[in-house]
Image 1 (cartoon, rainbow, N blue to C red):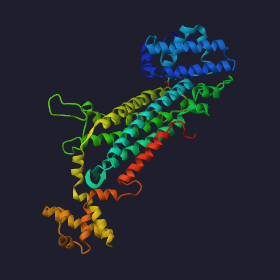
Image 2 (cartoon, protein in one colour):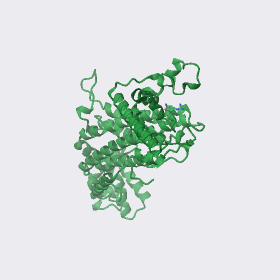
Image 3 (cartoon, protein in one colour):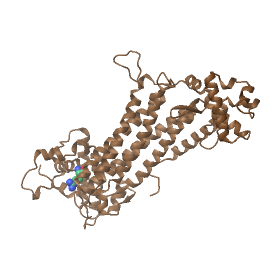
Image 4 (cartoon, protein in one colour):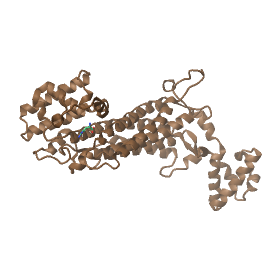
Length: 466
Ligand code: ARG
């Protein structure tokens, strides 16, 4: 069909341009939200007298029929109609005739597309938040089960001090809990209606923006028409939040990869969440975790792409803004897929507690506690650190286990050592004593699980104050 804007043109668009500028292949996923926006606009036009009630009802119904056709895959969507918005308008003509031409009253595709994007992203953010909550829930269940399961904590990937698996998993729950907050924060700024901003300068027609906002469930209306049609901050914020979720997932995934090696052997993935090798019959590979790790790169790239599209754009709308979609959609699809697969991968993996406790039995995990022992006897910590360092070197050189060293030998390093020194060599007591807020003591970990569960129970995306 002729272009929406064909009036002032003498020639048809070159087919190369039709293909080049078409966003239909990727923005067709906005069809439901575009139609919801159009239905609200039509109702509003009737309310302010720009359409009769009958006309509005016919348009709303026609749009519902178009929605059904698209959903059923029987709509005739055409690339040369540029985008989903124009296609829907043409399909509406086929349903209600020239009346369809009244729908665009007081509206531009610029405020229309911004509205559809915000509506869509609000729904999708709710889906992402749901997946995040489920993942946190699984981490909390696992942490509860393993609140007493000792394991080495690491720095520089070298054994450092004892913690529990429960405490380690809660670290990830804490990251994802903050991610949830970031979504809620971004949601608040996405929840603003741009419709009524026209192409850039609003409209003199007596539109009722507040009515449309209420109809569509937006918490506020935008307050500057130029900003409203060019603002994609909400996309950037969401993709940034998604990138950080991915970064957190990738750290967890990397640990799963590492832990499922023969060298660590801390976990074994369920067969349903692992893959084999086409050549080596013995292999069981953590492909899912590896892909989560790798897909993080895509989402970080999406963020970079989006920021670069926006950089240096003059006001107001520019076609550049059409490039927001693939980055946003890719980030959304990727983060959703990774969250969805990560949760059951964790829930079904087998934790090899014997391997964890064997690793946690390394006495040197308690070297810091030995230094603290001397501190309690009055030695300055730096001095205590040196004494224990010398004792570590001695034991390593001689192949001795410090827990079995006779007291005289301890005394060669410091006269402050006494018979009670042997109590240091108890990883469980070491962890249990770390009861400060945020510490790994099982009672702390259990309290933290309760606190996080309560927070999750109350969490809603929309509740945050605006
Ligand atoms: N497909 C366009 C986009 O996604 C819709 C807005 C087009 N507006 C325009 N003035 N060409 O940005």
